Image (cartoon, rainbow, N blue to C red; front, side, top):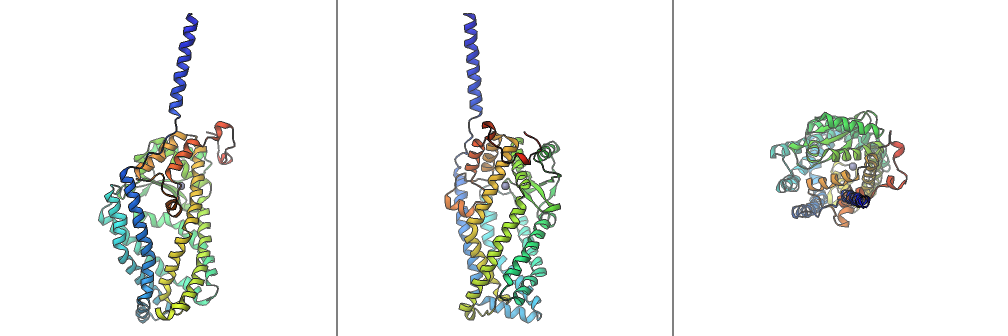
Length: 418
Ligand SMILES: [Zn+2]
């Protein structure tokens, strides 16, 4: 009897432990978006439409109103030598565009994020950053724009091939320079402050088979309450960057999941894939500029006062076609991006096998960034560079090939098993 009672209580304990284990393994659901998150989502859609209207409308207005032709007359008068006249036209165009779009950027970016409690940025910092952005665009443009225009003048039929060849070194140089020279102009980058966490991240990187990885913490809390981390740079400038807001908002095991995801981008060579994708889309885009631009000038060139694509006044036409092209190819480009993000999620799951922390991390991201975890299909198609957070949480819950003895896709990349 005594033995039976013991057995019963033992069974009871085992059953209770089983229940507890089952409860802790319960999948984590992406919560329903809050009312504020839904309003943020809908206001984002509204401002996206306004943004697309401006991206097409402003260059179209430059052409149809004859402003482009008139500006060209003015810049020709000041700069007799064509590279100088072109640089002046470019600078004037960018400055006018900056001023015209300023109210849009204020409402869609600064005011909207403040209204939803997502921004800590002062108006002065926002204006300084915007002006700095313009200064960098104009500075680089003035220094370099003569190069593509030289090809445009010298190779009227094949300039777009020359542009494609030129965009390869340009893209590599831009990706290499950006984290070293451009990004630090806007925010303070430095080593991680939490040294214990840094050690865990470096140990994780070591397990992921990443040699000499560099992790930077950036003081984004002066700009935003949103959270993020990313991989950037190329070759010697390649690095993982963590926003300080992410470190503050996420639990340590969640930060490690996010880092595992970024290491996935690193180990799977996604920066290089990104550059190749950019070059491919650019090549098709340049061909579109050539064919559509030429056809548009034959049809409306007289009315606009522009007769050749190499004229500085054709710049708004090239911008207009490029804006239309990017809108059309966005679903394809974003689908490629979502697929890479999904593989980086797989990488972090296989690396850490911490499904629960992974799901919690994405729920934290959803809450911190006021995201809609399950946006509509058109929104996903045209806007989302990452899979919707609801899908990412589901994947974190479900992806456990190691439990069924199935192959681990990225195991050959790892230095050691978890
Ligand atoms: Zn990513």
